[in-house]
Image (cartoon, rainbow, N blue to C red; front, side, top):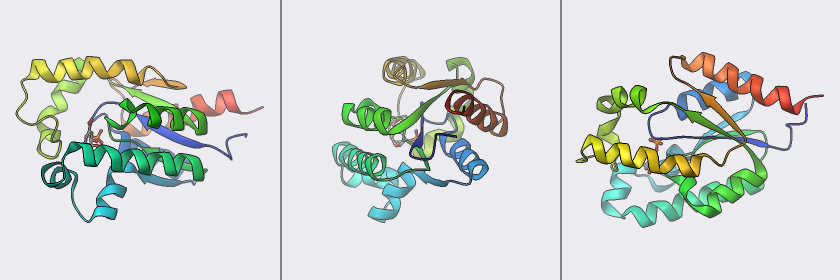
Length: 176
Ligand code: S3P
């Protein structure tokens, strides 16, 4: 396997399961798992909603950019799950694409919208937004997510199956 000097980076919209799937992928590969949002919360001793509220979104975006660029350029054999907005920053995309294997977890809007009630409480960007506005954000972000190495369509699949597919897909093309 020629994956040893890489990281696997999971991208996709809020609530598609990047953290859960990232943990499973890491466990199966026996790699370390890092969730960018959890790492920011740990370093700042604050929750993401509190950071948005007290420090502002720009502060959060800078923190996530610095963290992700640093991890991508220094680490290897890590599974890194990004917050859904991180990948909109060009510097983040470039770092992930050049040092990592980027996997887009692609859930359809039809399936995603059913998850909204369970995720809205700790997602500042979804609060007080009409469903139509959220849909626009969902569609807009697909442009950034389209820059990936691999895409896994996750509709109807449980996290375990998605994790297995992710590993199979990556290993298929990176082994010889
Ligand atoms: C955000 C996604 C969140 C978190 C923050 C902003 C976004 O992470 O980083 O609330 O801009 O899409 P998840 O994708 O894990 O929900």
